[in-house]
Image (cartoon, rainbow, N blue to C red; front, side, top):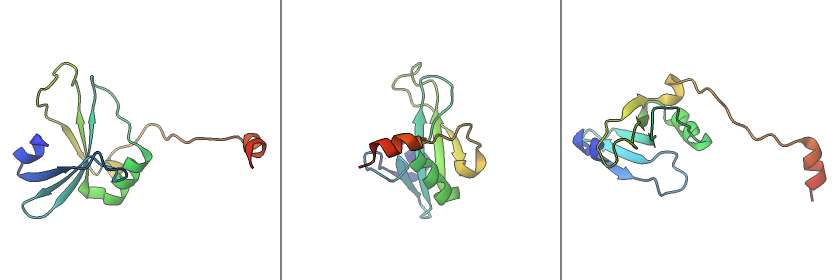
Length: 112
């Protein structure tokens, strides 16, 4: 939030609302909107986006931003500069696509 304010944008925290697929909606002085998903990690490493976050990233394209902050454990309470990826769904290649596979025999067995 502070980073957005410092860069002349007005952020709104929407992380407690179920469903938007991003944490912050931030608007600049020209009315341009950034839909920002924030991922903080204790160390340098991969981040996971939920199915909903990835769908929103694809849909919002260049208006969707992924902000990644690493090493939060080493700098508790510090203002760390995020690594920013604009349009992550089109600019990143996820390494894993998770699906939940339920066997046909279990579906037959447990169907009502």
